[in-house]
Image (cartoon, rainbow, N blue to C red; front, top):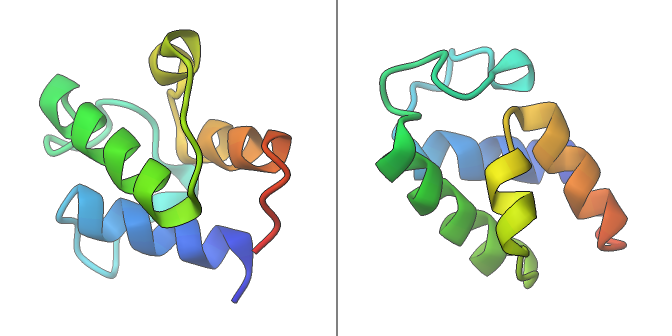
Length: 79
């Protein structure tokens, strides 16, 4: 499974979004579920799924699906 597909699934589950949500273009606070509490739950879900640990600055900077995807690639995660 492609990295973006796996991450999309984590976003949908972590933020309790519908399958129809345009996750690939989602940005922080675009949806009600991605508030500060939802953000921390999402970060934890991404860390669990991909076996990474984000630095505080990365948690703060994770402002969109695309940024999260780039961060994972930065960790060397490819799928």
